[in-house]
Image 1 (tube, rainbow, N blue to C red):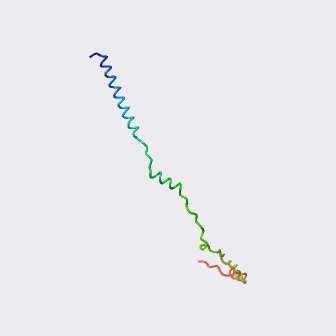
Image 2 (spheres, helix red, strand yellow):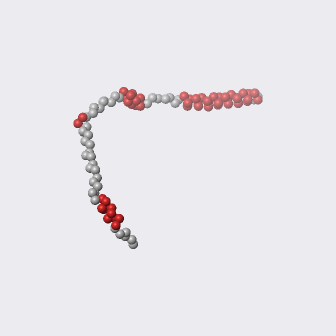
Image 3 (cartoon, rainbow, N blue to C red):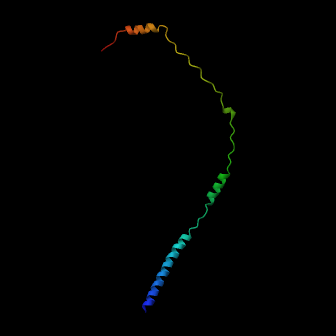
Length: 95
């Protein structure tokens, strides 16, 4: 065999091997087909089309406002001055 044939055979086998690898990678990448999720599409369609019924306010549950009675003003003892004088005159307890 001549050296040219060996070199040509070697180059052709490398090219076919490289093209085989490329084709294998290409077929793997092209087989991934995106499929729609039918259930999700149906759910989203129904969700977008949903119109809730308006809620009417029930008047029987509304009560009239009753304010609490105003508190009475505190009363001050009339003999406050006498009580203070008695406190001042009381002896201081010490231990």
